[in-house]
Image (tube, rainbow, N blue to C red; front, side, top):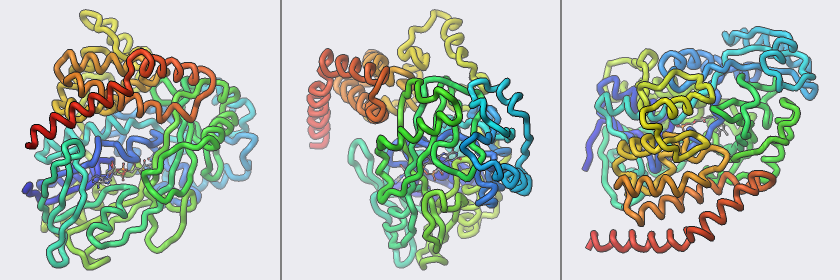
Length: 536
Ligand SMILES: Cc1cc2nc3c(=O)[nH]c(=O)nc-3n(C[C@H](O)[C@H](O)[C@H](O)COP(=O)(O)OP(=O)(O)OC[C@H]3O[C@@H](n4cnc5c(N)ncnc54)[C@H](O)[C@@H]3O)c2cc1C
């Protein structure tokens, strides 16, 4: 049995933040995540480091939290943030009276707002709708959640903690009225083990209700699905928000070489329901057109959805009506179950604050007196300590490749991932073969995230990893098949024009030429057979 002071459940921003906060206070911490880090909502979010402007009118508490944490994250995670700045724009479709009320509310929350002329905004962002009547500048920014979580994991381990990905909690065990240990299952091998802890933290986001239920507690999380669409063109260098009460498809975020429009807000019964519906895609395109004329004519690359972990104790508000602040629930006082704390709600932008508040509650119960250090702890740039600070100008990765000695061959041309980068990252994940997870490398390197959506790079990546000894042949076949399936999930809602042509080409490469579906079935049978021989 593994033993620790605190077991943190959930490898999203909240869980990662809590584990680091505790490790920095000298607490022995283990973080478990059932898949890869950011596999939940943190890896499916819109990418906006909020200034708080969006919430200033209806939810000032969240707005204040956002602007304060926005300033902190710029200090501690500069490598993950592109300081794009943000505009709130009044389009002909917005109530012009809202803007003055909004500006007063922002100032009351401490958010810096500067009104600029539409002419100046159009000089800075010529693709914007020329009919905009007012424009306000706010300190929004774009934030890469994969970078943040990789850095959090590196920092947790640096500070003596343990991060276990692909280990899902399947049961919490109580002794009398105290949660004492958890049973976790290795998602790939099926092996089970127990982790004993003085305290358990439930940071499972939209799944927090399920974890609380394992200890006999009820936490009602209202999962709200939001769909986003990545367009194959970076229309703007500034984040654009519509200046109106929060609605669907009213934020456009430039991310690397693309721009992401979002989101919808649909209450779903199950947090695993992340399917994208046709009306959601159409809505995003229609709303995008109001911000950028001609928006819907550009190729849409990928559609995906995440699920907000909305929570308001004792309230039944759902979707956009629910507040975006967070709660730390001490189940000892709330439900008479000691040793368990749940942290739920909030935003990616406020993860550090949520973590600090949760760690305060936990440390008080453990008798630890150290206070939080995360507001001034600069996160290590885990994957690439030599990377230039953001913004990346679109050509910077190409320049890197072209000027590196030996002109490293490109495996993913869309995102400029080179062979040596792929091999190096695979070496950092020694269990990548057993996990057959090219998708984990995508999160690290952006492999397969460009216009071909993995069409040309998946099979190359499988071959390179096999040649490098990171995967055997069967594992590589299953990995390529799994990756192609995952990429397909984001393509199918967009099957028209260029995306349809690309999808048909991919279908021919993978099914007709490589026979991948059959190959993957056979390879999976080989892997299962080998595993059962090992277990005999
Ligand atoms: C569409 C959308 C857009 C958003 N845009 C923004 C934005 O632009 N800016 C912003 O600040 N916020 C945004 N948010 C909100 C933000 O993404 C979330 O509030 C935040 O990511 C939640 O992080 P979390 O760690 O609490 O949850 P998650 O990231 O979901 O982490 C919970 C983890 O728990 C794991 N887990 C579940 N069950 C188990 C188990 N049994 N055992 C082990 N692990 C388990 C899951 O796999 C998951 O990885 C957005 C949310 C959505 C849905």
